[in-house]
Length: 448
Image (cartoon, rainbow, N blue to C red):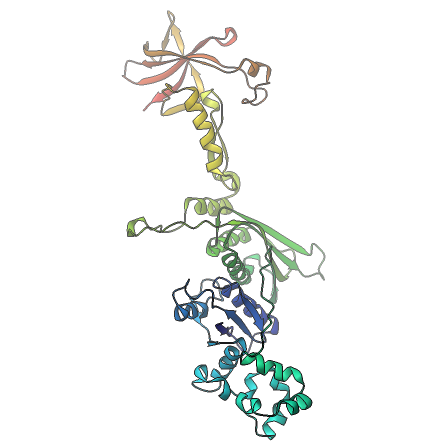
């Protein structure tokens, strides 16, 4: 077996909860490279014997493991690491390297006794009898060591040298991401919550990458000061049209939403929850530079504009399965709608029903009734009919409001469409209504 021990970044100002958060975040990062990850004392232990060939060798794998991003939008930094045939040797070399140069390559026999967790409680007595390394402890009579210091010390020493099997509790990812962050000070402005939210987004990104999933929806909750009169929490929900692990886009969406939010009382903590995720399907990258995507995608731009301007200010068209031209589409909010699954099918149905239809490039929202002279339509002068008629009829049930493809209350259409030309050589799309109550000629489109 081959073990790699990783030490999360530490700083004197970090609280114990923050140090534990960084250790867990580093463990989620390690799960990308091996399913055998565990937490032991201050380090993260990774068993990589089954992943070495997959990532190009032990050296490349160890370098990728130690390249860790622990802050949003910050470059990766190399963290301390050490290798060993057992987990205890790896963590012992890691501890030795922090105090002595060359500790990463020390043999097990010359490792300082303080680097073995089980021996730390007995260092004072062991040093007085001349034991300062693992080798010194191993040369002592086993019966005397067990009687004076207990059997667990001998068991740990045997596990360190591979003479007893090691037992570890492997880390597993939660099915739903939930994280809470205590703020260093009360925050009264909603926009100031973004900096703290980015720390939670970094943890969410590590969780998504380890699971091979992309984010579709999240909920950010801010907890308010309970001493004030009013609500104790506030929240916002952010949804994306495409599953993604790009937390920069999620951060921009949160910033747009927070710009319109107000805090009735100061906030003291933040919580982030994943509402919906989906498996992330990766695509092959092109070798051509000009085909590399730059900037945001159309879906990301739409979501940012919707968050900034409001969902009813950014619309997209949606096709409908109907014969009547002015009812073939409608405008809906672009945010939260799935454009692929709802627009292609009605268009395919219409093309199958009217394979020879020639539709104009510009369609009037409301048909314009034309004047008639001697049974000839005028626009503004007499029109010459070039092609037609193309008969269009909706279902007879539509007049009763019972057609499945038509909304209730819409009237049936019975029309004969023609392509006409006027005196200015403009091609027009006109029709003649065949219903008795609405007979006449109408202009419905122009061929541009």
